[in-house]
Image (cartoon, rainbow, N blue to C red):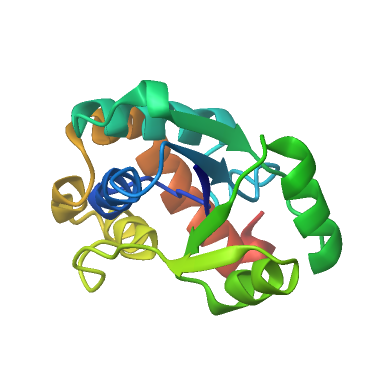
Length: 177
């Protein structure tokens, strides 16, 4: 059985690694659908789809997840939710079950006839991409504890800390540019 696990992974953190590892206890393969693939260099979505795929792959490797059982696919977003659902289905291999913590995503897939399961959560109060981004913006080094070392290294390599700080300023103060 193959599962779909949609997310933005902006950036991937230990909670994502835990969720995928736990999903693989129940299914043969998991498709990590990297959503909003066309967005980047903005505060909510600072990393490119390619960077997120790279980070997620390295995070899973670091977390000792069997990569032969994981398919990572970028999915561009669209404004129309039913079109988005169709796009997901056209971009990924067939799947049988969807794991999500997003009630709206769950509703869309349930109405399309898919089994939906709550994604496995690990310390959700601590591990969230929003929190990681906020800590990076505030220059708090604790963000590095929330992501695998490989993800932190990639973020630094691509200049992600500075990119995120500048993007957050640009969105807050557009008249500055």
